Image (cartoon, rainbow, N blue to C red):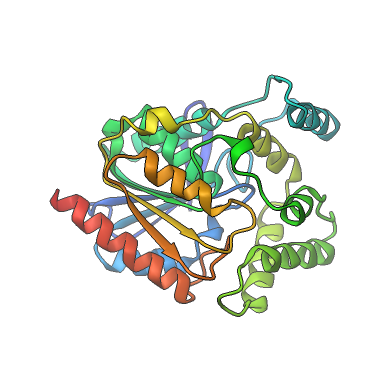
Length: 298
């Protein structure tokens, strides 16, 4: 892995495949480090002729931590935003999209296929809107167009997401495994070993709950991108499961409706599942490769 200077911060990143191949930039979700994009998933796409880049968003993993607000201050702002008030926050989804554009600059990549999952989908959409000249294609997974009030998690998922994770390792692993299980979906059996290993690796690599909370402030203050998505002229693929308790299916449908000519792929029984090369993600991988192949020929 390596570090890049991007948008005034340092971004930890890793590359799979030949740097001369068409690029695929993978953008992770809330609190998820680059290892959330499972290595076999990245290698499989790279073997199909792509240069695959995964990275830590700001405030997570080994990228720059953005200090300035205590957890108490973050919590106060969070509940103020829940009450419909306006708040100044450390950074925005648009700032995180600029980070991604800066990483492409650092790597001398003029254009890339971009795939974002959950919050990463918000960032990918903002990247497409703010930097359309950098996009070969867009894939938005488990995301919505930014209107938070219209696309709410279930009560159970929201409570689980906001519950503080224990600071000690064993408690954290158990907490995250149960959260992964809650949002996984009912169409496939839950791979507990995989998710425990991911939680353990994430804790050992960088346990930093303050950064996750600040990222969530960026989500809570994001703009409704629907109108601007309507101006995109980028080949776009929207993917969602019909059993997602964190981002309702209607959010993905709104995203697909907003982007002219977009392709929508629904996966039965899938929730907000982490990439782990199960049947769902093998299906997603194949759809992404076909989508990027068509985009290259467009």
